[in-house]
Length: 450
Image (spheres, helix red, strand yellow):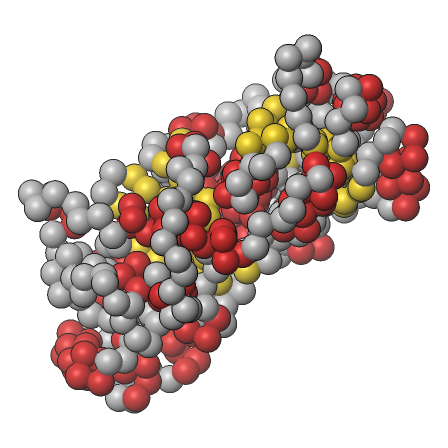
């Protein structure tokens, strides 16, 4: 086990890096400024390796690298601004970094580099499942109190969810909502391993508080790290899980009965009550998923099924955008692609569209006060070429150079007030724009050049 220092001002990304390190058996301390990193290097501190972002809000990352080298602590450097061979060579040859990674990076590769720098053997994925996902599974399958009305309908015998593994995992109650009831199939299909005492992970490593972040910012972190795995979201008795492949959303699930695929199709008018009942009965009789049953009965075409599934995943995600309380957790669990309709939803567009669909004008006015000034983020999670911005939206982004208030931007744009405010709010949540507590300098104008 290694003790790691993570110096990264993006708090969601830092939390994700540290959590993945914790799940691999290491101890990780996260700090968000260079000064905090220097304070952590006290006389009694001991770190085996460190990760340092070269662009920090207070001092240069190279200063932190120099301090680490003076303490004999190997470090790797990362950056989304300083890119190319020149900066890589400078970080390694001048400032002593063991390796350099440009953002976005593959988080598993970065963690492996940290392990190599610390001189510890890497942890295999099989061990990850044993140490982490069994803990997550235990939490998911705990039966809630019988008097809890919020889950009473969910725990009744459900229709097969979309999608779910074809065979039921042994040892889990059929009354649990899918796909949670069958998640342990990943490891139960393998040869049984010797029973051993599992290490208890630090409590924080499986979760955080949504009061200190937001779901869109967590989506940004997964995309910036190109991470595979799942994001668990909980508010009271409501549990939602989002699955990622290379930082893109491939599936989302909920333990709320109205958000399951069959009920969602009914709510969207794609099915009648009679058709849903027919498909549900057929699915149970033939041990099929709801979507497969709908296809076999000719009630949906493959194209309709995919479109509805995309809408379902978006709705599940968007319903969490307004959560300001509750918890979240990370896990390296990856969905079995053979069991999924192949989706690949880009988080940047999900955020922009979600804000436009869900935020009211009153809420947007409160969040985007007239006197606020928005600046381009130096290190955005998304390239501007990746975002689907209409012409007026792109012009609004170009105007948001920090010299103008929100009120000024509303006067300049051809968009309606709601369209303009939702665009600005979406760009802020996606990490493309940010508010800085400083007086803008018109002689040092920052622009995206649109």
